[in-house]
Image 1 (cartoon, rainbow, N blue to C red):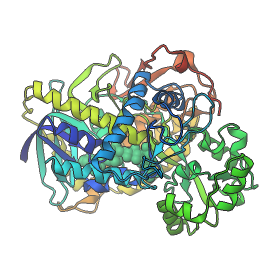
Image 2: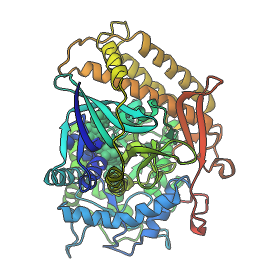
Image 3: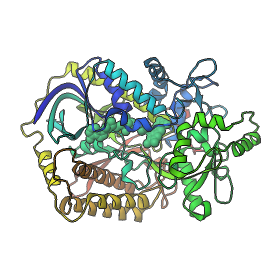
Image 4: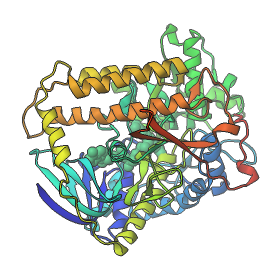
Length: 597
Ligand SMILES: Cc1cc2nc3c(=O)[nH]c(=O)nc-3n(C[C@H](O)[C@H](O)[C@H](O)COP(=O)(O)OP(=O)(O)OC[C@H]3O[C@@H](n4cnc5c(N)ncnc54)[C@H](O)[C@@H]3O)c2cc1C
């Protein structure tokens, strides 16, 4: 096995990984390992914007952003983390601007901002323009800008290196094992600190906005070495996935004035969120769409509704609301260029002239590797730090998103907490000794990869993947109940068994063996699916994205706590589950209230 040594290793080259790498590289010898070429990371697909209370177009304050984050997260958000997020977002966006990010501009030359779901002026309750954007390709611009900065700062990149194991010694992190995808060689990376920034796991579900590569690898790896995953039951369905592919239609469409319409031609969000209507939080809008579909109000009775951004419809509603602003075709083509292109290509619909078909789509993991505010991985409900372990971005759980993430807050999370994790990791490496690698480092994973490469059973990975995605969609989707969750748990466990004993793959080679790597990724998805379903079955309340039909109410008395799930078993043969309290700051404004929209 080839060996390498770097003080700080960053696994993942999305927004979180690159921001961490940039800041780590200022104080430590740093490398980034990525299974994708960096600029192909999913951050590049982020459309709508990055939230920061710059107040460029109207009054806004970071305190309002923090409150919206806590409220949007249905009060499961750690309030100290939300305040850091909202406060440091301002400076982080300006840092991106100074790195050269080409934001859209106001006529005076300031960064342009638009409305987004759940962003409000806390005094009037009205929507506020907080989402900074570069047309509807904000994530693409963030990724390109940060990649250029990393190159400029001499960060070492190992592109198309697929990390398959985390090496620990005596409770401390000391490196990772990666496959060089092009030739199948295994590499051992010795490190003082490892930052996981591997993104989400939308591929657990059948309909998802997520890229093919989003299989939760980093989170599964830390879970497998005996660390917990936090708040896994909270997985966000974005209300507007293009029907039938599930590709994302950005919330920016509704931010610009787009409205949701059911099969009866009604603007149904008026019923579910009378004040803020189509701009209510994602969990609220996703449930509303599912209710309409269940009641037979889908378009032509099918499983989708319409999202209408045609100037005719939008201008009618703007006039009704007493607004002077009007949209025209040119404005829509400019502000929502990617969206128009996608709808035309993938749904055959021209958004300037006709409404787009849409349905809720699996979108974002609120849970993940538990960390503190410096991005350090933690091992238990007492917040014990795991020396050398860091996580940032979607694979991590700080927790700033609580039970439901607010639109634009993921990009903020990447840059604010990616930066914090990178800085802290560099500091840590300066004071820490090298933890020696255990003698058998990499042996177990080498054996597992050989098993996969030569597996000759009757069940193909894609058959298991498809079944898992259907089970998760039907039983661990927008709505859940105790029966569906128990069935899903049994199903997933059966699939895990098949994965271990009946798997068969076709490619026995070493070069670009994606057959084997996708099978390995499926193993990660199955672990994640089990943790998600278990945590969901234990939480007997409805909060944010976790909607239990048998427990429809939020239960603040018993459930203002984060769940932690371990892969290891208790003496009773059950998976270990524990809880830790939500961090509250004792401010009146953050006291749980009923969410009114
Ligand atoms: C279509 C879409 C639109 C979105 N729009 C917005 C938006 O407008 N605003 C917003 O705030 N959020 C948005 N989000 C959410 C946001 O984009 C993501 O949560 C965020 O980009 C995740 O960034 P990340 O850095 O954590 O991971 P990613 O960008 O997903 O990158 C993951 C990285 O990890 C690497 N990796 C993974 N596994 C391994 C492995 N085993 N070995 C080596 N490398 C590995 C990959 O190569 C990749 O580089 C959107 C998401 C989607 C899917």
